[in-house]
Length: 103
Image 1 (cartoon, rainbow, N blue to C red):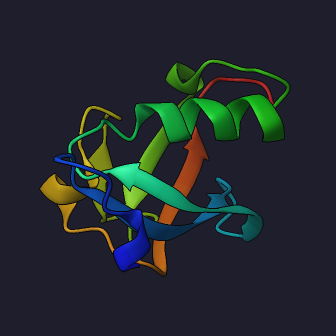
Image 2 (image 1 turned 180 degrees about the vertical axis):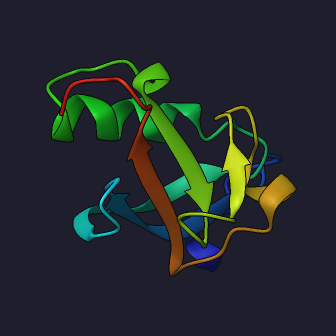
């Protein structure tokens, strides 16, 4: 992980798991993301990339993102950084489609 520090910018290596939570209470592992990100950059870019890859480029506005728990976990807007959330490798982010949107 020390190989992620570049110059004056603090860059962290993270491994995030994206798990889709469905209204019927079931879960589906969708994908994981592994890489180096700036500790200060918003997570929105990772969310957008995931939506593009897993949901044919849909807007992230069609989904809710929750940290560590699909029903009571902190709701994420995408404006948060890994430093804000103290995200480390192995963090789970749950994705649920906004009610009323097609599946």
